[in-house]
Image (cartoon, rainbow, N blue to C red; front, side, top):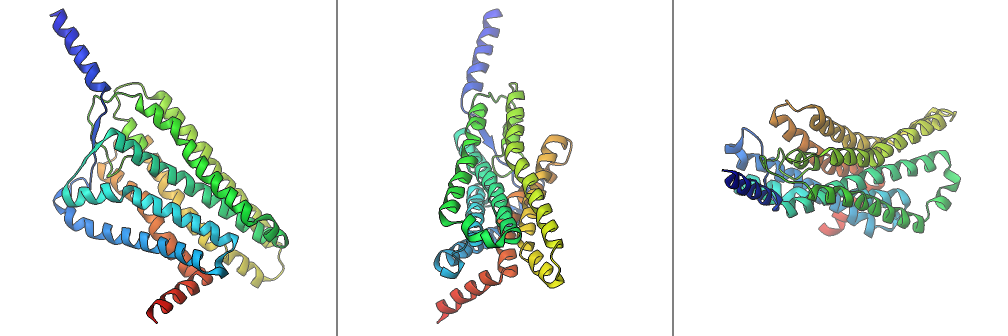
Amino acid sequence: MVRISENMLLLSTLTSSFPAVFFLTGIPGFETYHAWISIPFCCLYAIAISGNGMILFVILTESSLHEPMYYFLSMLSFTDLGLCLSTLVTVLCIFWFNAREISFDACIGQMFFIHGFTFMESSVLLAMAFDRFIAICNPLRYATILTSSRIIKVGFAIVIRGTTALVPLLLLLKRLSFCRSHVLHHSYCFHPDVMKLSCTDTKINSAFGLAIVISTAGIDSVLILLSYVLIIHSVLSIASPEERKKAFGTCVSHISAVAIFYIPMISLSLVHRFGKHAPPLVHTLIANVYLLIPPVMNPIIYSVKTKQIRKAMLKTFSSKLI
């Protein structure tokens, strides 16, 4: 009996040490309607990819848009495209083919891109807030502060910051063993979701993950808020009401982008940490809003609210038609 129990313990240890296979989840309770549900998802992905692709194209090709504000907008569109493409395959494969299986290594790779682009987008929004702060509070030095070389350096810093923060987090995840249910709550791999399935101690992973979120998105959101406090203080000192309106008008698009990025992200984090008894459908809906709404809405907001972008898009479309 002792030998049998030892063999079973050894077999259990070996099984848990092998790379796990996870099962992604579509829309819980609506599995029979996945083919129909895929239609709005396809539309959202098409809007996000075409919209962000168009913004990137017009900024690169239109010389009048070669300014700091639009360079940062192109970075935002790039990160939104990255987020869309990171989840596109797994989401549509679930809806179309019920292909829910994903290997541990593929899951790690998807997490790297999803969380990496998320942290990059947070950094880009901070850079855009700084751009608005300089343009409104110190307009005479705007061109000398935000030179092309500095913007390139900012872009590299955003990429390095977004990727290096993730490497130790994912390496810590690889040391875990998975011997419980391998069913994830989402249609893509999300770090807290995968971590919860481990049968080993995850306190270090949880603490390190929280520290990374605070040191990236947490600090970014505080600095964005601070920049707008300073912007409001500067705008209120302007005598003319029309100038105030014009100054605030240049910030509307960015404030909207910040809201649609941080509100779903905070909601998803709260659900994972405190919503253990929430229905699976709540997890799924918030997770899809978190990754799909910002890439869909950002091109719409900036094309509607920014006259220069709108003019460049119309010019591109008209030239193609002619």
